[in-house]
Length: 115
Length: 116
Image (cartoon, rainbow over all chains, first blue to last red; front, side):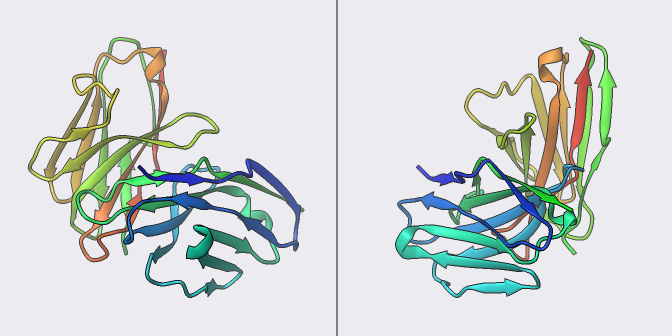
């Protein structure tokens, strides 16, 4: 069984502050993929990043960065210098390869950026 | 690339009617599509996995006769909510797996269903 935990339900930050979203996962497999998706108020899930279990390099994409630490089973997401457009729900998800690649989603982090 | 569309974006119907929702992969072939349901302020709940040309695989607790899924081509899957009731009101969202990057699911914009 796999499980994804996003402990912070709602996070409010003032514009230009940094915000870090924690994601902790559980899996018995050695090969797996981790994802982050953004769901703005419109409802569509926007793919942000995919990381496989053998690639522990951190990644930066503009104001977004991700820290993957296999030792602590965490895949945290940081938004630097937050903007109002970053207000959304962010989901961390885990999939195991093969078969239909079903995703296990965390409960999501509601991020509210206050202007 | 990897764009998924859904139609309609929102629908209001009377109790007892059936509603069909379409999910299309616009710029790639999707051998597998997924249907999710999301309640307000909740996470996504996988309803079923749809493979092109074969029967859908439903998650435990999801009525297959209630939620009919057809995946007739590599770019189209449909979800039909049969004899809809108010408790079926929800946000339904589909995703498609790209044949190029097989592990990533790309999501459609979702369909808001309100059953009166």
